[in-house]
Amino acid sequence: MKAAVMENIGEIVVKEVPRPKAEPGGVLIGVKACAICGSDMRTIEHGSSSVKPPRILGHEVAGTIIEIGEGISGFRVGESVVVAPAIGCGECDYCRSGHTNMCPNLETLGFEFDGGFAEVMAVPAKAVRQGHVNKIPEGLSFEEATLAEPLACCINGQEPLSISIGQTVAVIGAGTIGLFHTELALLKGASRVFLVDVISERLKHASLLGKDVITVNSSEIDPVKEILSHTNGRGVEVVIVACPVGEAQNQALQMVARRGRISLFGGLPKDKSTGYLDSNLIHYKEVGVFGAHASTAIQNRLALSLLADRKLGSAIKYVTHILPLNQIEEGLTVIKKGEALKVVIKP
Ligand SMILES: [Zn+2]
Ligand SMILES: [Zn+2]
Image (cartoon, rainbow, N blue to C red; front, side):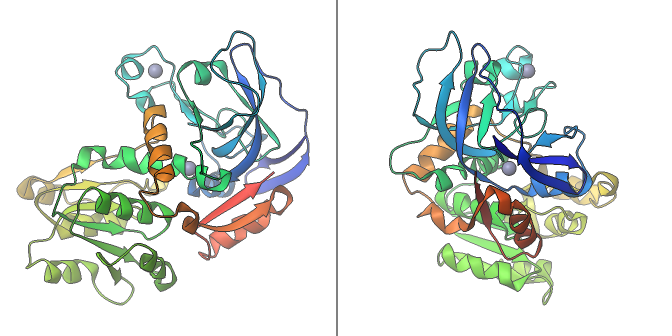
């Protein structure tokens, strides 16, 4: 079968590789669509502690079941599915309490396992057993269904933030993740969302989201001053940092209201992750600061149903590019240039 293999840092090669087999309890997916994630970009450019090349990347996968391993019931060949990619051990305290994304032995498709930039992807038995293979609701295309993974991660990130009716929210970073966070916050009843980015091209996407979104171009104006002036000097109840920039975390602490909540949704580069947060601001303003990592199979199902029910309007607006597997390099390039929201690869 054809696959895009990461052979080394900075090197993706589209080539023939042996087709995987379905292990007992596992399934094989014929990949119909696999979106490129920011983390794929990071892994290709800088490597990842979870990826030992050669590896097939891609964890935002939708396709059809083409083979079912021994001992499985409840699935049939030809069914359309997505796979929630971050798989816990199923046995530790975190897994048993439903927080499978916090499993110390988390393994992820497209990281520790081969992923979806290939014609066929094997889903391990432990993923099937724990409900990670989710059927795509009727009416949702494969391209749209790939969005369930990043949307599920946003659902997970917002869980501790308790956004409720009438609250004000700032989202820093207007990529796909920032736009999802904006739409979810509005869905939960936020009265206004300030969407902040340094790139004006990106802020144009805000027009896809509706009237309660106020864009702030932080390369032109100080986003802290701007948001304080819109909120009578009080700041916003919730700030979501949806970019890998330390300075944005610092701005979040300054623009958040007293007793507000901050999500550090975007991780920082390994060697640049300290020294940004003034802990006295957290202390005196009684701010809650939360992290976010991956998502669970349950959140993946919720994301699928939000997409299918058109709770985010037509999700296809997020898919700006669809490319065949052998043009994956081109997909990486348009993302790097900041021209794309989601690039979907069709093997
Ligand atoms: Zn992703
Ligand atoms: Zn576990």
